[in-house]
Length: 253
Image 1: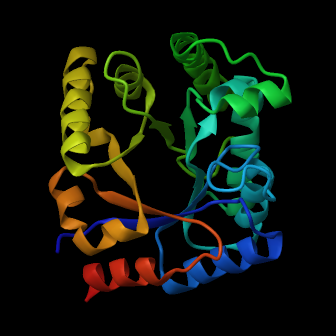
Image 2: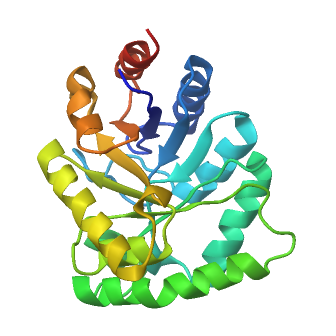
């Protein structure tokens, strides 16, 4: 099997901080390349009133509690923070991690987050236009912060909208994340390549990540054939890392 990177997204719902910390420590110890969280304020699945933790606070804790794996948010909701503030948060967390951070970002979609925390939900296109307007501000602030990030702090854009999101990815991102099925992922990857040609960008400069379910690891070759080079398995509490171990064995065996 061709070489690829392996990551895990630990979903911070229906769990405890102690269990999350144990999970990211175990994930790093078994050899994952990356560990991710999500940027929501409420559970996305099952019991909507289950316990839940804020992602960036956890990410800072994880940055100081790990030493090797790359870390990131899959993905930050652009509308929850001023772009200059987000740049400073990401730069600071990059220093805590010793230079291992991604800055994952997307336009946002979960209405409950917005309404209960006092943000304007608006329309999908309005949120995309805000992302379009905020990305240059984000990059400008990153370039002016002192001290600068230690690592490369690649910007990862999550989403698959062909008219706006993938164009913004071609313009601004160092990495792109989307979902399956593999046929859809392959199509979106081709569209991203087309936008790269349109804006004069080498498509090989953009890392291709895909978020998959634990069940997908038994046939991961379909995603590699679709163009993914970084597989991120989404796992909820109680954080069974068996699928990650299976994926590592497939790659390294």
